[in-house]
Amino acid sequence: MERLGLRILKRFVITWECIKKNHIMSYASALTYSSMLAAVPVLAIIFAIARGFGFDTIIETKLRNSLEGNPDIADTILYFVESYLQHTKGGVFIGIGLIFLLYTLLSLTANIEEAFNTIWYVKRSRTIYRQIIDYFGVFLLLPFVVVIMSGLGVFLQTFRTLLPDTQLLSKTTTFFLHVSPIIFAILVFMLLFKTMPNTRVKWKHTLWPSILAGTIFMVVEWVYVHYQIKLSAYNAIYGSFAAIPLFMLWLQISWYICLFGAQLCYANQSIHTYAFERISDELSRRYRDTLILLLMSRICKHFSNGLKPFTAHRLAVDTHLPDSLVGILLGELTEMQLLVEAHNEPGDEPHYLPAIDIHRITVGMVTRRIDSHGIENPSLVWQTGTPEWDALRSLRNENEDALLIEL
Image 1 (tube, helix red, strand yellow):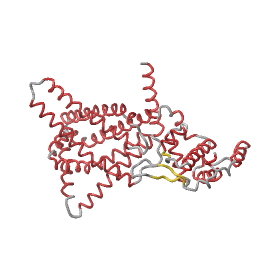
Image 2 (tube, one colour; image 1 turned 180 degrees about the vertical axis):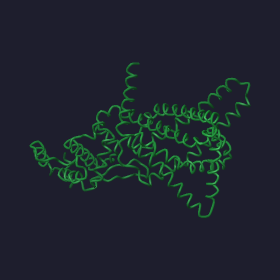
Image 3 (tube, helix red, strand yellow; image 1 turned 90 degrees about the horizontal axis):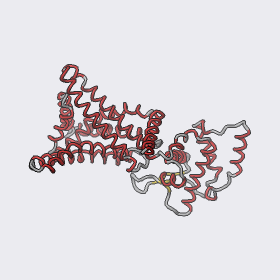
Image 4 (cartoon, one colour; image 1 turned 45 degrees about the horizontal axis):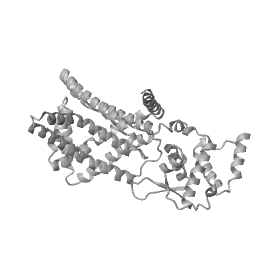
C-alpha cells in the first residue's frame, strides 16, 4: 500500500513539475477563446444531425437544463444556432458559413494539439491534411454519439416507467442514468488524451487520468449549474449580466482540468524515463552528436538490410531512449535533409528513411550538417579555444570518413 502511494505521489510530482516548467495552464485562455468561437457552429452541427433523427428536442432540453439558472442565455444560444442553420441553407451564406465553420474547428483543434504536443515534448504538429482527416472525422462522429447517448437516456427512462414494480431493474436503470454522464465524460477525455498529441499514447495510461478528470469535471459542472441558480435567485440583474463571464470561467476551469489530466497521462507513461527526459534539453553537444549518429546508424543499417523502416516509437524502444527525445532528434535530422518522413497511408504514424544514398552518408557528412544546423541554435555550436573542446573536435574528425552503416 505504501509503494502504491509513493508511485501515485511520484506521478503527481512529475505532473506539477512539468506544468510549471512548460507553463501548460497558460494554454487554457487560448482554448477558452477558441471554444467560445466554435460553440455555435458545433452546436449547429449537433442540432442539424439530431433534427434528422428526431432528437433535437431532447438535446434542447439538456441544454436548457444545464443553463437553467440563466434561461435567457439558453434562448440566445438556441436563437444563434437556429439563425446559423437558416443562413447556411442557401445563397452566399452557405459558403461563408462553411468557411467560418472550417476556420473555427481548425483553430480549436490546432490550439488543443499545440497544448498537448507541448505536454508530450513533440515539436512537429500534424499537417493541415491530417488535421482535416483526423479531426473532422471526430467532429462528424461527435453529434452521432450525442444523439445515441440522448436516445439511450430516453429509452432507459421509458423502460423504467414501463416496469415500475420491478425494483431491481428500476434501481439499476436509475443508477445507470445517474452515472452515464460521468461515463460519457471519461470516454471523451480518454479519446482526447489518446488522439490529440502527435505521438504514440497507450490506452492503458489514459484510463485513470481520464477517470479523475471526468469526475472532477462533472463536480465542477454541478457547482456551476447550482451557482447560476443561486446567483439568479438572489440578484436577478447581476445574475443575468454575469452569465457570460461565468460560462467563460467554467470553460477555462474545464480546460485546466483537461490539461492537468493530459499532463498526468504523460507522467503515467513516462515515469520510468522522466529522469532522462527532464535533462534532455540540457544535453551536452558531444552527447547530442553521439545520439544523432546512433539514430542515423540504426536507420541506415535497417535500410541496408531491407528491414521495415523505423517509426519514432520503434526506434526509441530499440535504442532505449525516451520517445520525446527521439522525436526531437528525428525532427532535427529531417530538417537537416538527412532523413525523410514517409507514410504508408494518410494518418499512419510516419516512418523514417535515409534521404541520401546510404553509401555516401559518413560521420563527417552528418557532423557537418549538425554544425550548419547549429548556426541557428547557438547552444549547438562547438566551442573553441579550450584544450578539451579542441581534443574532442580532433577525435571526431578522425572518424569522419567512416560510413554509418559500418559503425
